[in-house]
Each structure stands twice: as structure tokens, then as C-alpha cells.
Length: 253
Ligand code: ADE
Image 1 (cartoon, rainbow, N blue to C red):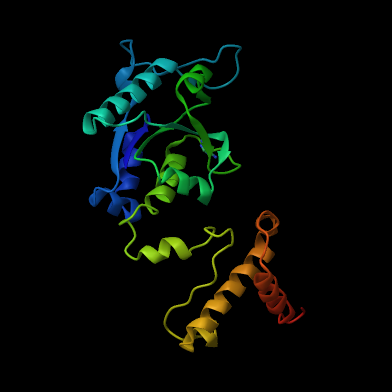
Image 2 (cartoon, rainbow, N blue to C red):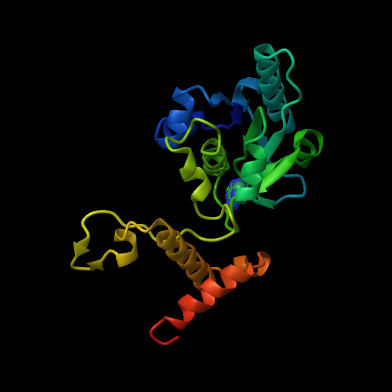
């Protein structure tokens, strides 16, 4: 997947992208990441990329032109690599965007390329959004000082879904949120610690029982911590039974 990130702080992205799952995706050339600094496309001798907002107010707004030129550069590179390439979708990271969910990550993982625009300061000129941006995405209901970390969060969520990135392809599928539930708890050695023992069922070797316990724990956690997720996802009859059972087993249940 060809990914261009447009940012005034490419070093920040570079450093973060060298490690972990994303680092591996880059090494294996499953993700081809290009960093584009809009400052390179500034048209005055001070390399200006931002200016004061019309109408007044605090902060600075990123100007249209250097951002548009950065997107054109990404498009040019993409087409040079693959002559049959279509137009790259342009995604702008902003707290005003649609929420990033596992479903959105899954959709983006189907693309052959994308441009991620990390804004700085108070935002970007709306005419850039109107003319060039295809999708606005938020990583959560809080405001960060720039879109670099959101762009990295989005790319991490997408990269780990690409074939060949995770060692064990099953681990991408079985994890939290893919089926709308939180993940079940995990344990590793040793079996016994002052804080407690590993749940007996996990030591039983009975895979059916283990699977049942895990589904039950995922349901219980979701019910306790994120009831909003359960209201969006109808439970099957089997799941309702599993949840009722684990709830009635609780000490004060
Ligand atoms: N830029 C600043 N805050 C953000 C957020 N929560 N999501 C996406 N981009 C952002």
C-alpha cells in the first residue's frame, strides 16, 4: 500500500514509524511510506505555510496552496510507480471528522494507496478540504496539537490488517473490536503468582471450553465497560445465554 503523509514534522513520523508492527510493514515493503513536507512547496522566501485566520481569533491556519501541491506530489509519485493507478483518496485527520473505528480501518486496508494529511495549528483553510479532501477522520473526542499522531494511529490500525504484516494472521482477526466486543483477558507464565492463579479453564487443554470462556469474558467486559457497544450490536441467543450465565456466577450477581 502506498501511503503519503503530509506533515510539517516529518521527523516525528519517521521516528515513530521505524518500530513495531508499522516498522515491520515498511521493512517488508507491504507499506511504502512517503513523507511530504508542505514547507517545500511554500511560494515565498520565508517558506510560509500558515497565516492568520480571516475574521480574527487565535492561532494560525494552514494555507491551501502548499497542501494542494503536497497532495499533487503524492499523486505524481503514485502514478509514476504504477501507471494504472487511480486517484489517491485524501484523508484529513481532524477532531471534526468521522470516528476512526475498526470498520473504517478495515475499509481503508482495501485501498492500494492513500494520502494522510496531518494538520497543525488551528486547522487548515476550508477550501483545501472542499477541493481536495475525500474523507475527514477523528481518532477520538479530544483535541491534540497536530494530526501527526492521529495519522500514525490510523496507519497502525490499517497496516496490521494488511496480509503479511502480523506474524500470525489469526491474531488480527480474533482481537478486540473486530466483532464489536472488547478483548478477553490474557495470561502467560507463571501459572501461579501472589496476585492470583491463571483461570483453571485455560490450563485444561479443552479448546471448546477455552473458547466458550473467552467469549463469555469478552461479553462480560463489554457489558461492564462499554454498554454502548452492546446497544449497537445485537447479541445472538447463544451470546445472551453466555452473558446471563457469567453474570449470575458473579459473587453478588
Ligand atoms: N487532530 C487533532 N486532534 C485530533 C483528533 N482527535 N483526531 C484526529 N486528528 C486530530
